[in-house]
Image (cartoon, rainbow, N blue to C red):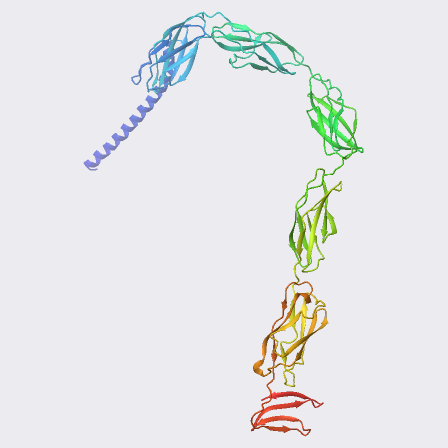
Length: 581
């Protein structure tokens, strides 16, 4: 290995050993610190000083150094940030804590009352604790002398507030003192119960007592000087188990109406009645069961002029009970009711061609609404207890008047507003038998064919005359309407069209029918379009050749060699067709 390599290795070993030594030293120091803290308090009591270069010892002063018994004493001392808490030591000799030792935290003063100290000389010392241990102050003496106050407080006046098998609760009047009260003390059978009570407390409950056992209780007021005054002595015997039931309730009727009864049923008990059970019967059947702590009760919603039986059971806190005798009461007759219900407000929520749905607001009554009568066009229709009704079987597109009348059991009524509703019209349609009507064979502007009109969704009335028309009817023509059935009519065309060449064809004719001719509609109905077609007239100018068959019937018209018209005939010799070429 080179020289430089040996040097590097040596430095590495030295560094490792140095770190190990530091850690070991720190661990030892930590253990010593723990041990030192444990020794700090023992050294303080033994009188050995605890020295720490990190914190100065507290310096204690006492104010005052002489105090009357029952007054406060204040300790003040210097503090340092090195300390995290302080202890106050009070002892009968220097550096002792045989009177008390209290951790007061990080603070610079502490006050306490000398009430519990007998007259004599005591010593105070402050011990401060820091991370490295603790330091104590100088031990300062102070003297407690007898109080100059010899006047006792005024005596409280005690009384009981509740007595049970296992507890007695008392209260007392507040005492007054010429200097000031320190506390109250309560006694049971001559022994103090617990510690002192604050001067604002004037009640106390003794628990865990024996049942059926006599006890004495009193209260003692204590002032700051230790002077005392005793209250009157309360002699109390706790009750034994309660086996005595309450007295039987005596039921009387306080008041009654046609639908209510008020009963009174007082009972007594050696401890106290805590509950009543009221049961009611009518026609050998219980209808009422109610518990209450009150000795009067009103039963409501009864029937008029009806006999009712009632029985009451009284209970005490121990569960003892006594049942009363049955008490019979008859409610008053129903009084005459002359007050009508309030008037409902009527409206319609929907309608169809043959029905109307009615709705109305609820009426109120001093006794009760029993129902609603519904009227249509002034005539009674039906009675209901609901607030809606569908009126069906009506005629389409017809006006109706509706009214609702609320009534009570006494027959008093109140009518709603009158509502007029027109039912919806029927959904109808018209269909035509022919889309095109052809001019008659005579070629003279007349039409022998009829237009058949079929109605769907309703029927025709008997009022067809004047209520059926054809729009865009060629001039010179009129119509005649014939009823073929409830749903079909035939329209005949009378007269002759003035202009009947092919250029005078009509392609947008329609049939219009007024509402009076159709049941259940309120608007004019119009069919689809159809056409009037005309044949051309025979020309009257030029040179023409007329050809006849062997029966001397015209069969062909020519202009030169061009055939203009050809005619055919049926077996009876009538023109069957005329064809323009």
